[in-house]
Length: 68
Image (cartoon, rainbow, N blue to C red):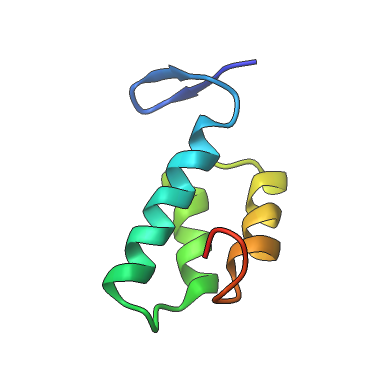
């Protein structure tokens, strides 16, 4: 199922992939970034579902975990 994104319709999961790339860029630019705050911003910026945001909280919030 596709969701509408800023550039039209996106394939399933594309918003989450874009959010992860964006979060990883933020972490490279500022290693001490507030990860919880960055996840909240990514959720708004990329129109993530609550389930996708929860995935980021569990998998990216702590440095050294998958994706972060």
